[in-house]
Amino acid sequence: MDNFRNELIKFIFSKFSTVNDVFFEEYSFQRGDGTFYETAYSTMEDLNIVASIPNDSKNSFICISKSAPSEVCKILSSIQHYNEDVSKLGYGHTVPLSTSSYAVDRGWSSALMLTPDVLIDNFESSLENKFKNNNIYLVVFLTELEHAMKVNKGLDSVLDYFEDIEKDITV
Image (cartoon, rainbow, N blue to C red; front, side):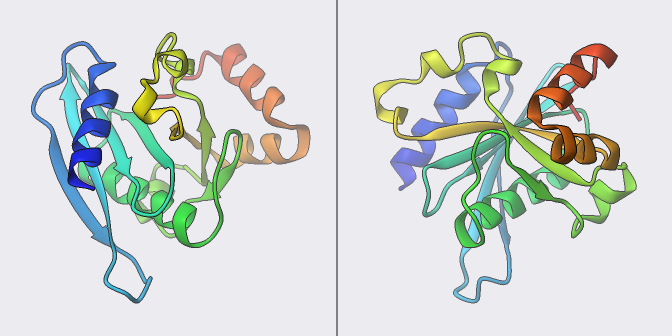
């Protein structure tokens, strides 16, 4: 697992031009077996790149953030936990963020899973053979209004809305 973890993190962070050192953080949730969910983050200019590392799934989640990296690491760890222990996540899925006071304080109610090529050109097509069976999702935080729009009108409507208002999907 350590070799896979290192290769996955190296692959993800290689997609960004000027990342600094990579830091790892672990968080535990109420799984009951002592399982930790690991995240990694690095800084790039004024942004933080945060990635979750899967334990029992083929999904990993990344977020580009201007916020405190340790808080975003906690949120991505909780999303990884949700993905592995509650319900598998995929493109266009949302997950509630109600357990994160940090998210709630910023007006975020849920997280939306998109493909990273929304921000990084050709990210999906650049997946190397060793990661072809893995899904890497870009996490975008939604307000209650955006979440309601996605639920009631569909994913395309919220993506069109993002385009119309020129939403900065870094958080």
